[in-house]
Length: 208
Image (tube, rainbow, N blue to C red; front, top):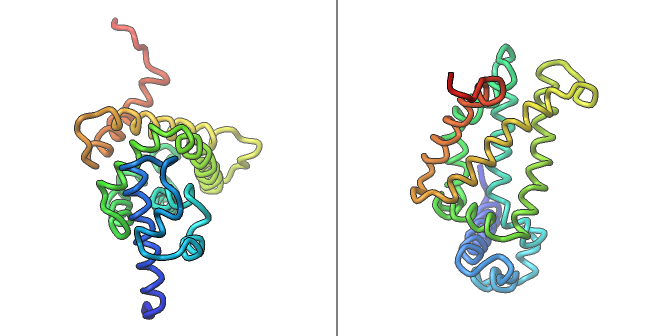
């Protein structure tokens, strides 16, 4: 059971997180300072750094939580599933859990608005791609362990994750330019694109 001290620390962290994302999405990442984030919650800069290493850390905190939930979902998939199906089903079947994870700290709309901010801010986009590479490496190692192969000598785990990651990036880019910004649009787009991977890679694109 959560103690009073633990509850207070959690609430402070969540308040800092929400304040940071609200500032990033309204006035921009580069224009926002740590002091402004701390002031919005009425705490000191020193308190901010007790919870986050810096602006990048707080900017991606919610995404890190959602991605950790997804990696855990992949680990939990039945061992008989083929790798690409395990990735697909982990995403689809853990969607509600990932959404609940996000909603436990910030409104989903704020989290989704942050995606658009990331796409628009070069520094954030570069950080996003770097962090995605690390997540994809983790996923590749999870798949290799599931399949009993050596990730350093067998390219298939990284290839499978690269394909899946490419679908996710295309989904994010398409969603960011869509007029419909609801979270279900992301799920629908992802499902549609994943269903087209096989034909895109091995099918004949030209009409007979």
